[in-house]
Each structure stands twice: as structure tokens, then as C-alpha cells.
Length: 444
Ligand code: 5CA
Image 1: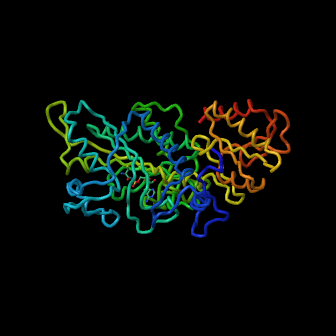
Image 2 (image 1 turned 60 degrees about the vertical axis):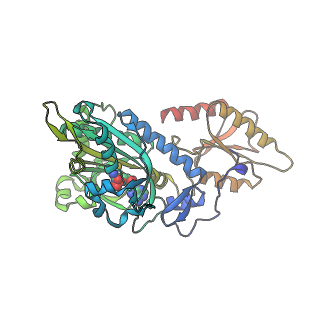
Image 3 (image 1 turned 30 degrees about the horizontal axis):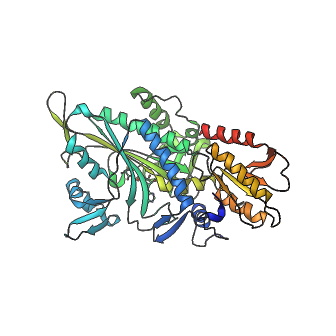
């Protein structure tokens, strides 16, 4: 992509309305544009990153055997009346009437709708377990939308739902998602810690929030530092292995604000390991048994001929919030340098030719390199404008491709000035550069 042809509306200075660094960068570099309070349009750069995150989320859902569906954004109030949540959900639910005067709503979550889909066709325990997910826009009329896409009213969420025959099987499903979340966040180059959490309007009594540490986060957390050293490597998708994984995490005190008990924290965690800080909730999983299946009459035939209500859980990831969360984790605000993890970078390499009016040879060289990159499926962004060199570098530092190539005075023969964004450059040839980038891509 050539900067001159791109739609990347960069601002010279930080927008004053943005209070946290992810919001600043996203507006500054034109990733999003506010349309009304808490509602945003996604422009090419932001959209590209979000779609790459979505693909990693999808991939890890598929790996645990979840199947993708797509439910609508607009739902009928009928099913919400069946579950009893139509009233309970209160003002966060955006309620609409259609021309026949039917009460509709813009879905804030999908427990009811997916239960309705499930009960209409699954009748026997033999078809269980079922893990269904979709990635769809949600609307919650948040009282105080803020921090850009971090707490907004319309947001993009992956929500999955599990259906099982009994508690034991349902916990197996829960644990599959527990593992898949650890893996998803790791692929996004984030350390997300599972923390015992409250269940709020979703319900149930077993729940974990997945939180990444950030000063600007809205969740208060209390944790044992040793939890950061844990790994999920080697866990098999099998009951005992998954149980062991969850136990390994649960042995360390790690809770959000609502679950915090001072005496317990001080008893279980020695002073040197206590960490009281803030974080961003990027995912949340719930087990709630028959909270929805019972009032909605969603049961299956059991082996002996009896019937029972299916046991359900739900599992959310804030796909759009993750864009902001990754910026909070990676953006060096002081030096104005963003470096996206290669797995989700909008472009993998930025090429910065120093262009002189009378000499366009460096632009020609940039074009040649670009053609070579295309053959290797490496995405580039080239600054073909005639701005001065330092403003070009500044711009590319904000766009955040993880690698940069500078073509100019110091380019001699086959050797190119190549660097990881934010680090020192070195002179190497194109074949070596391609090898470095491809190796990094494979690792991720
Ligand atoms: N039905 C359940 C699980 S599928 C559910 O809705 N859970 S949730 O309420 O915790 O939301 C799941 C995730 O969506 C959260 O962890 C968070 O990352 C994201 N999220 C929730 N509210 C917002 C919001 N207002 N703006 C941006 N992201 C949000």
C-alpha cells in the first residue's frame, strides 16, 4: 500500500478529547472515527487490525471443536421475557419497536437466542456436547461510554455457548474455553490472567475474567505475582489435563474487586508476592447450569428415558476492545512508537524512501522491494510522499508496522537499512530480511 493512495487520516497532534493512550493513538492515526457517543466507524487501519484479531480468536475456537454460527443483532423481546431478563437488563438494553408495534431489541448478549436455536432441534443427550459461537456486533447503552472503543456502546464480541448433559461434562466444556482463552491471548502477545470474578447480569456461580495489566484499566485486581510465570503448554484437550490446568491457576489468589477479601489475600499471599493493580478485562467466561434452559424449557432425553435441562455456559471475548488493549500494552507513548505484534500488524514492513525531487531512484528501489515482498506474502506500506524524512519516520512509527526499511543516503548496493521498529538499524540484504520476517510470522 502506498501512503499517497491510502485512507489513513493522520493527525499532527494528540486529540485533546482522548484520555488514555489507546484512544489517543487510534484517533491520531485514523483507525476509528467517532460517529456518536460510544459508537465508532472503523477506518482501514483499525479495521485491518480488528479483522486479524478476529481470525486468531476464530482459529482458537475452532481448535476446541466450537462451531461458528451467525445470529442477528436485532432480537425479539419474546425470548427475553421467557428467561426473565427483559426487565432485569434495565436501561443498558436498547429497545426498539417495529412497524407492527412488536418489541425488539439490539442484542447486548445472546444466551436466550442461542438457547432458542438449540431447543428447536437438539432433543437427545447423544448430540451433546455442543459448542456454538459467533462474532457479532453488540449494543449496550453504557451509562458512561469512555476511552474510545474500550468501553463503548456498540462493540464487536466473540460469544460462545456450551450445552452439556450434566455438570461434569459442562465443566469439561468450561475448561476447554479456559485453555483456548490462554492460547488466544498468548498469540496476541498478551499476558492475560484468569481471575475469579462476579457474574453480574449473565448469572451463575463460576466465572473467570481474563485480565491484562494496564494502569488505565477499569478493573481493580488483587493477585499473586507467581501466577504470571504459569504456562498452558502441553495441556491436552482431555478432562484431567484441563482440570489440572485450571487447578494450577486457581492455586494462586487472583480476583477482581467484587471478589476481594482482605484477610484471605493476606493469608494466602506473602507480602513479597502481593500485587494490587489495575487491568483491562479482555474476556469473561461463565458457568450457569440451567439458568436459561430451565425457564426456556430447553431439555434433552437422558439415557434412562428421563429428561433434564441442558447445562450451559457462555464465553465472551471483546474483539474490538482487544485492539485498544493491545495498544495499551505495546504503545510507547513517550517516544510515540507503536509496534504491533506481527500476528495482527496492519502491515508487516514499512518502507521509507528518502525522495529527492531530482532523483526518484529510492522510490524505484522501494517499488522493486515491494514486488519481492508480495511474492512472499509480506504486507508492506510505502511512504511515497515527498515529505521530509523525519516526518515520514514519525508517521510510520505511529502506524506501527513491526519492521522498517529506510532507503536513502546509506543504502549501498544490495545492503538495506533494516530495523525492528523502535530499535537500532542494521545493514542486511533483502533475502535476509525476508527470512527474518517469515521466521517471525511462523512463530506467531
Ligand atoms: N454473554 C457473556 C459471555 S459471551 C458476556 O456478554 N460477557 S461480558 O459481558 O463479560 O462481555 C464479554 C466481553 O466483551 C468482555 O470481557 C469485554 O472484553 C467485552 N465488552 C463488554 N462490554 C463492553 C463495552 N461496553 N465495550 C467494549 N467491550 C466490551
